[in-house]
Length: 302
Image 1 (cartoon, rainbow, N blue to C red):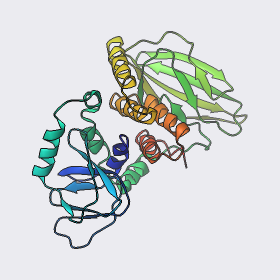
Image 2 (image 1 turned 90 degrees about the vertical axis):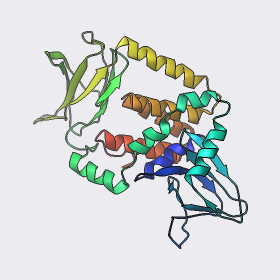
Image 3 (image 1 turned 30 degrees about the vertical axis):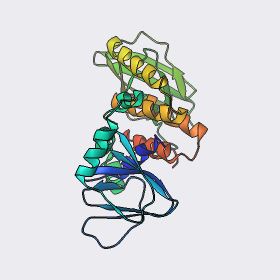
Image 4 (image 1 turned 180 degrees about the vertical axis):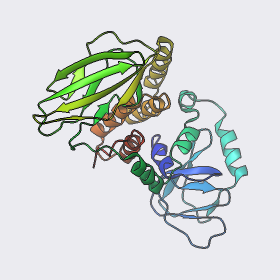
């Protein structure tokens, strides 16, 4: 399936990968160069030159090659040995006759490989340094916009509920000083204060007020895109919407594009759309988790 490669790149690490296991079904085995033991594969296995792939009867594997090209490998009694020349020939063959998808997803292979080259252990170490915020504590956790670019001058602000809070004070400021402050009892706000400016960065925090004390959140920021950038985003949105792909594939392409542009809240929204359709979609779950780690938030699944 088209979108499976996004999950696969989560576990890629190291240099010199010439293909990545996107998806597989049935009896499939892998063996690293100069190793004697065949191993069961996992989605995300990165093949280096000389690695081997064995596919038995009624099984198949889908690999992602450079240039965001898929290679579907069927059953064979002779294991495949992956070499640069073979991959280069396959890529060259597939370049004949471009598709509308190819123009939109060009470069995603490199983007995701760089983005997810850390191991899960590495992510945990980074998370420990960040002291991830956890919803449900005494201080409110800003859920969004959170260190993200946005495309509107009237953002939707949201934060977590704090037990015992009788109100929440929201404060927004820029490099010139206070821009907006208000107090309300809800944990979300459709901004209707003084006009915000495109191309400007704003910082904000929430102070949970209780009968005995107040508890401020960490301060986060959002940057409003300029008109020309918003137009570029709109063009890409239209291109993706016109592709002949499933809804899930379109949502994943949009999410990937949004992440590249720093539109992290929009990317989260696309992953959530997928989970509405398919609650157990591993691609969306893993990428949503990773985005939460990146923004300093604990996983929404705990």
